[in-house]
Structures are given as structure tokens and as C-alpha cells.
Length: 554
Image 1: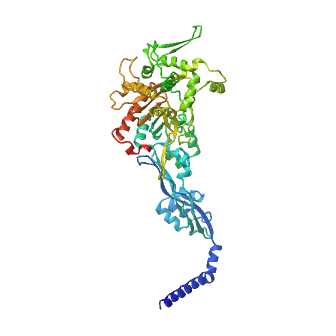
Image 2: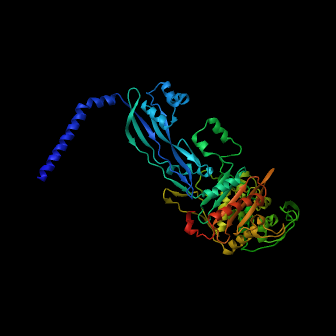
Image 3: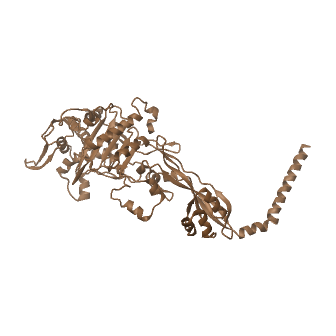
């Protein structure tokens, strides 16, 4: 009995299918044939939702918003009067001209009833934070910053939809749709709180601030000033407006942290000290600084006189004190003893004068000169005076801020640094740190440099004895190892530098502040660095277990 019932169900099902087949193929054949003959088809690209860009603390830095876009199919041209009633005169004219017009939900419904194709598109919206890092898109493509570097992950894969359009050009519905595949979200290493403060400190100035985790190269903040509004650039502007921005003499699109070179001034002195320790096996010496260095020929003839920043002199100075008080005379002396050949060799070992490989477009390398460089570039031989100037971060040497902070990370880690990076995660995949430099030296060298740089921020005394950043960091509860820099610029005010790491005995963070024509490093850059460090340790107290807070990628 059960078998007969199943057989009956199968027979009825077959009959129904046959009847429907007969209806479609025979009875309705002409109807479908007429539909195809009297229709044309419009293929519309469906943009993939672009992945969001987030800060390490979860703030959305770049996201998508849906907008409704109306566009005539080409054959269906309603009267301009009908269109004006719905979207107004200006947008009605734009539609007639074949342009794409943004509409609201109510307008979209009325336009669809008239057969106008209306579809949802995606607009990129930015928080405005870290524009030189996040970047922007134009016409759906990343053209700057992370948006450009990681465009392949963010953009996803576009879909498409085919609409049938009748002989009048009226949209009669969708006949086929291939959905887009969304792009991946990207989480940055940048902390929005540190970034916000860095941008605030640079407002009205030209320069950059970088905050880096020395344990893995993660960039916790990167601010460049002056800046720009990514929403204005991304949403479209006239050619005239675009050219005006590009020709802005302040260079708003330049990420000064990675794309500008500067004389480093005295911030290079820890490197010179390291090279001295390496060449002379950790020996020290004492120089009597009287406020000037007299360079003489072998016969004793005075060839040149180089001044110290303290014209009255620092008195008796050893290497530790020379770093603390930034004694130029001492570094003139040891620079000559080390020689340009050894200095350029050590620079190559620690990769000064090279791109760091940070995952942002537009990085340039600094210039650490050598005999060969000067001959190749300028067609001139190297002179002793060139070495003297290089020893205090002047002359031909030019460094990018990202190179300098990465070198200080090497000091903080006692010989190890990592490729600086901006992206922490792509989707749910964690980006692993990549080692950049590893140089094995006696621990006493690193200890010596750290202790001397701590004295920069902690040693009191008279003008000729106190640390150059002592007054700025007086009362700061955490030991900071750092160095000020005041780099002279011909005809202009000096560039202001400060670079340091903390806590000095167990570094968690390195900070760099650099202000173009900002004057003294101790008066402009160092106070900015202190504010950044105060904010950092209020967010990540020293007592916290950093490993427990995802140190590997913070």
C-alpha cells in the first residue's frame, strides 16, 4: 500500500512539471520571446563594501556610509518637469545630462516608479584622525596612506546586477545579481588617545611626532603637521581646488615623519658616542671645553674654529657629561678621532641612511654621508671639516624622523630593532613583528649610553653641568633616557628635536618630537615629548602587565 502511495505522488509530481514545462515552452513562449525582443539589459557594477580601518583601541578611523544614486538608463528620459517635481531643477538637469545624482529614500521610490535606475553606493567617511596614516580614497581606490598600501585587502571584490529595460527605456526589474564580497577590516597599531594628543601638540606648527613600541616596532602614534581633511579630498573636488591643495606651500600632503629629511643636530650624538665606544673598546677621555674647538693643520696652523653652543664652555668634559650637556667641543674632538670611514661603517650596520620599510607609501631614506657619497653626488673630496660638522648632526647628514626613532629603539633594546609598522591586524590575522637590526656589543656600552641619556633628563646643576632636558622632566616620576637636538638651519630658526625612551631600565615606549624651525630642543620638542609620555603612562601604567595587554602588538 505504501509503495502505491509513493508511486502516485511521483506520478502527480511528474504531471505537474510536464504541465508547467508545456505552459512555459509552448503557451507562454511567445510572451517570453516578446519580452526578450522588446527588452535591453543594463549591467551595473555593485561596489564591494570597503573594509573599515580601526585604531588599536577600537575607534573607527575610516568607515562606509550608504548613499542612493539615481541615473537614467540612456533610453528612458522622463520629462524634465516630472524630474524637477521630485529632485529639483539642478539635479533634474544633471540627470538629463547623464550624471549620477544622490537622492533620499522618498525621492528614490518616486524615481523608481518612473523607471529610473536607483542603486545603493558606498561613500567613504573618515574620523579625521591620523590622516597621513589612514590616507584616503578617490573613486573607490586607495591613493594615500593605509588606504593605498592595503588597498588589495580593503577593497573586496565588486559584484554586478543586470536590469531589464523595456523599449521605452523603463527599468522593469533586476534579472540577475552577483553580490559583492566585502573587504577586510584593518586594525592599526595606532592608539587614538595618543594620536589625538600628538595632533593637538603640533597644531599651528610644522613637524612630526612619533610614538613607537620598541619591543616590536608598532607605531602607537604618528602625527604630521600641517594636515588635511580626508573627507574633502575623498568626496571629490574640482580640478582647480585639487591643484590649489597640491600647490599649498606648507606641504599638507607630506607625511613629515617618513617623507622629510632634516639635519638631526645633537640628537645624533648617542650614535657618535656608540661609534666611539665601538672603535676604542669602551675607553673614555676628558676634554677641556672652553667654548670653541680650534682645528689646526699638522704644522699647527689654525684652519678653522668651531664654536660650542655654550660660548663660556663646559669645562672638563668626559663622554657621559658630553651627552648630558650636549657639549659640541667634545663631539668635534671624538668625531675627528673616529673618522668618517668608521662612522659611515657603523651607520650602515645600524641602517641609518636607509629606508626602514614601514608599511606606508612615500617613505624616503635619510642621508648618512661618506667619502664615496660626496664624490658621487657632489664631485668633491671629503674634508676633515665635514666630519667635524657631522659629529654634531650638521653638514651633509640628513635624517628622517622615522629613522631616528628606530635608532633610539635599537638603543632601548640594547642592539635590536624592528621594522616599524602601522597595521596590527588584517581581518582577524595578527601581523607579526619583523626584526630590522641586530648588533651584538658588550652590555656595558648600552648601559653607559642609557645612564648618560638618563642624566639628560635628571641631572641638576649650573648651565654648564645640568642635563639639557632636566628642567623639562623635573618631577617626572618615571626615568626617561633621552636627547635633545637643536639643528641649525641657514637663515632660519633652528629645528627642534627630542627623542627618548621610558622607563629607562625597562623601555616600553619611545617618543620623538620634531618641530621645524621650533628653536631649542629643550624648549619646544622636549615639553611635547613629556606630555606624550604622561599620556602614555596614564593609559598604560607602569604597574600594568604589558604582556597581559598584548605587548606583542600594542
